[in-house]
Length: 343
Image (cartoon, rainbow, N blue to C red; front, side, top):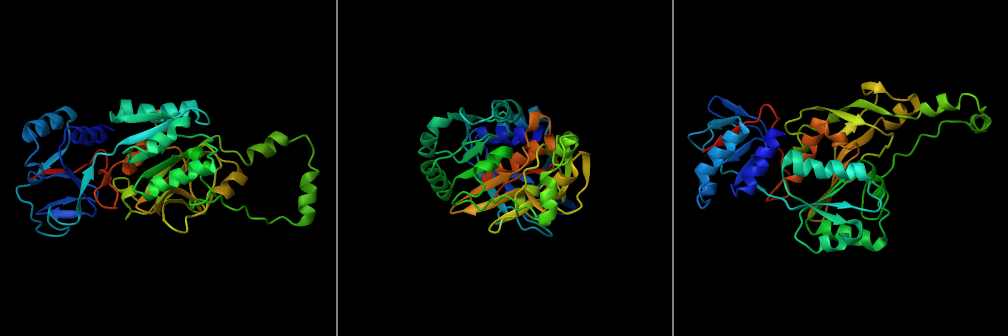
């Protein structure tokens, strides 16, 4: 999270930062997609630019590489090219109150204020309408049961279509699944039982009910998730993501959008997963991004902030909060191997 805090402080200090949407090479140096780039030319009018950059870099002990030219000698394009998009500092909001799980709301609040050290505005559930009328870029829905009214959903989708980014965590996705305007759908269970077998299932004895219950239960397990390496959400993470799953919530792949993280058939598991639950979560969405007008909805099916200790998940949420000036989305490079360049 040190690198995430570094980016957040650069933005708060008014320093212009770019990110690469593809891997690039300068001389013998190779940098991955998602690398942060600070150009002196972008910061000609940034007051005290050099002093600020040196101070923030020193305080965060950032891994910095200095380039003497902005012209690429190999692949990836020059620093002034379209592969290097400006990062804008998002104005972030979240919701508390009725229907929002208190503990999970605290995880979101703690993440922004204590871990990322980035400001977040908190709106009470009843005052969400005032957020839509403001200049907020990102709305994070902590886990909960929101029971949105039709008018609230209309306001929410209207805000997203106008350029907002909605990030839904864990159980909050259940409040969006199947609703008009949202492409998220519950996975339909495979009905393989014959009528006779269904009848026998109704006549199962009282004894053994606990054992039957745990067959469909996931108390907490680490699930191997396949990632689309070409999508910005995976920059700095790689082709696999270890997801902490605490429920059997299962959603079908998005028909219109990007199924960035998916739980494939036969996925590896560490921890206990009931055999019925294991079958249910296979070939389901784990992380998805759905375009909506000029904005987007980000579905994070497993809460990446669970109890504030799942650091790979915290990094994954960071991917979606910071965005560039175009429609593409921004990520930093891998936490311990970030290539940060100055020209």
